[in-house]
Length: 429
Ligand SMILES: Cc1cc2nc3c(=O)[nH]c(=O)nc-3n(C[C@H](O)[C@H](O)[C@H](O)COP(=O)(O)OP(=O)(O)OC[C@H]3O[C@@H](n4cnc5c(N)ncnc54)[C@H](O)[C@@H]3O)c2cc1C
Image (cartoon, rainbow, N blue to C red):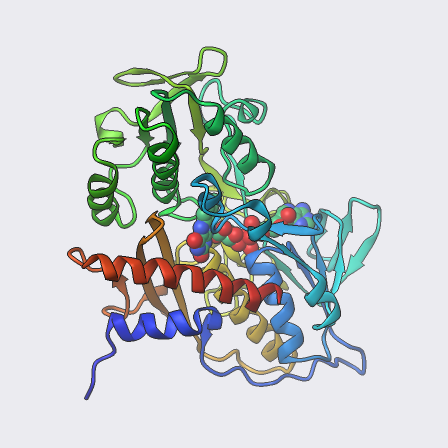
């Protein structure tokens, strides 16, 4: 019997990466007592937009309303490439035209200000009230602004986080461009759990690419609250090979945890050292999106416990939480995972409206990272719901091989670009 290898998996993931949920979801009839069932989705990002579209695909009888404040969605995936000078903001900007016109989703550009889970309704900033039969909440993350002395939402205008793509990405890019050759770029990498585990290290790589081309005497220091990170060996090998000693990583155990910052003096203090920077990219500790916390969907750690089969909240029945805000077992907080969860949740809601038991699905995730324009690496996984929650299927994924030829890294950089094109068209196309 042939074995399902990581290479086989990547072939599938590369060709149809955004397939997300593997398995079959039966078509559901949405009518309840003759009326179309109503689902409201909060947040038009990776999780929410996918769920809204797939609810309509699986059952066009369901009335789906998506509430999202912005008319355009700027993706965090590939925003690091903007900093590297490989993409522009336009190329990572999506819109809601296809969801509205092709898929019949009622998109409302508004903000949800409160959720009444018992009354099955929610309030919008515009003053409107919406009622629902089931609610899906996918608001992404928010920041623990007061976790480090001296850092705050205001301080992010001087030391940008750029961990929600948009004006913050542009600000960080502007600061990078204004930095002198020979300057010091310091990144503060957040404690676990946080959105996109390989993201800070891909960002360091892309900043290094920009600096190598334009300001080669400069230095990058990563002050990390952690002692290990995603794809660590691959990143560190790549950094040495492509950028020599430009990137220095300081783990928590060696004084990487930042305790205090001074935005006027541009200094950062750890237990062991005081650093002075020309540009700081401060990525704060994170929680579930504000609306999830304000609605009582999060636990005391700031994330939302859910039933792993349906993503229905364990705290408020009838409300599903997907994407970064949810506690999804072994699944990382990634756009790919959020989109997979959006599909699984849509299939579960269709089944629940029909009075059926939701199907047992598998989920997939692949995260590509660029170390340099022609140097890609990846981590892939397949996940199943077990009695322990969502767990990784052993041997079905893994990371890129350590000693691969340049052609392999080049190929993975191409797969990454293919992944972005396919997942964004699957979600917003
Ligand atoms: C630099 C960086 C690089 C990344 N690269 C990758 C990558 O290569 N691959 C990958 O898979 N993932 C990547 N990610 C992670 C990915 O961006 C997130 O995991 C993903 O966006 C999570 O989806 P979500 O639906 O939970 O949240 P989001 O996609 O952030 O969507 C949340 C939406 O909710 C809306 N919202 C919030 N509150 C409200 C409210 N009260 N009312 C209405 N709407 C609201 C917001 O406006 C937003 O549009 C990266 C992240 C970063 C920061």
